[in-house]
Image 1 (tube, rainbow, N blue to C red):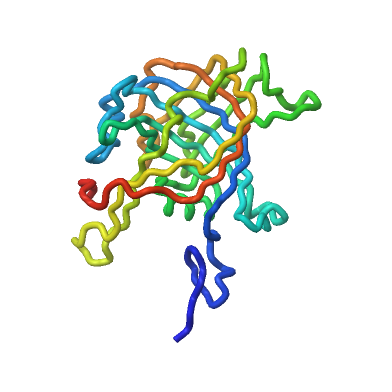
Image 2: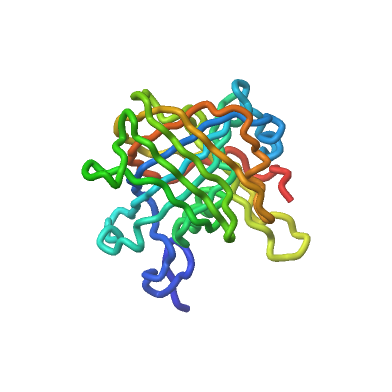
Length: 269
């Protein structure tokens, strides 16, 4: 019998066609973050058992635009940029499990298939989207600087519908780029059974975080954000009630696996 290889499908005799290579995965990028408060009941609707609302500021939400360059340990993707560059927009809330506070990505859109594959492994609920954000450069008048007065815009669309747009105007340095996305992630890995009515073949609550992190100086400022209705999206249900602020930071992250918190019992259908 043939041996087929590859971390992810498609598996072949060589493994060269696998959509993503095995971790560790390395990320370098620019993060534009807007934090705001919504009705905590809308957050609770997105938390499957046994997760519950965070004790403090349970309605806090972060929407984060990211312009990434990523690679595996070989770094070969960096010489074939179509395999390394992608953009995403993800929506993060906080939750609690067994007395500990976690961050949780409840929605996320990306513009490359390999990013979706990695999300399936990590428990991120990734979908295809169109994501754009203003890029900073140190020279010329066609780009803002990461510093006082720097102004950045960002948009998110999916299936030809605009879902969100934001503007951030930086005022001063910050110790962090927000608090909502500041904890290990609590995610679910779900896969339906192939047999009709068979429930879930994979049902795991997992936690993961960056194996290592480095970042440039974070900046904060004023932010504006709008959310829009769409036929097959529910982001607008996390209605903006109060804007907390906006942030910009350049970061580098290494991701190399996670930890199983609980097998089964999520109550998902």
